Length: 75
Image 1 (tube, rainbow, N blue to C red):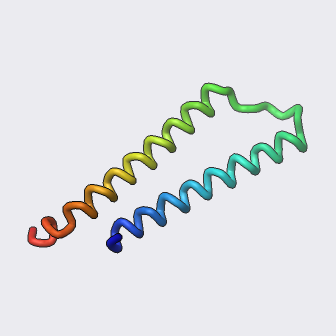
Image 2 (image 1 turned 180 degrees about the vertical axis):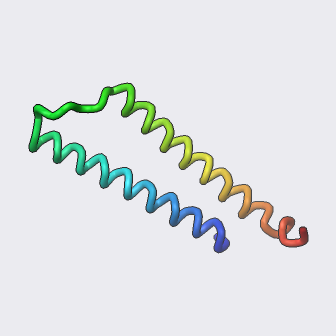
């Protein structure tokens, strides 16, 4: 794996860690204060879809860059 792909993978891993940490904090908050106003299910679905799409796009870019890295060096 080249440096760019490793850096992209590290970026993706940090984003996933931030997302899972935020979800866990939200669940803990909901357990502490069950009467608070929660976000709608639709909002959660949209956020999950957006993050998933971003991860897929970043992964695809990393794969393409690593595949064509030798050819791009001459540009």
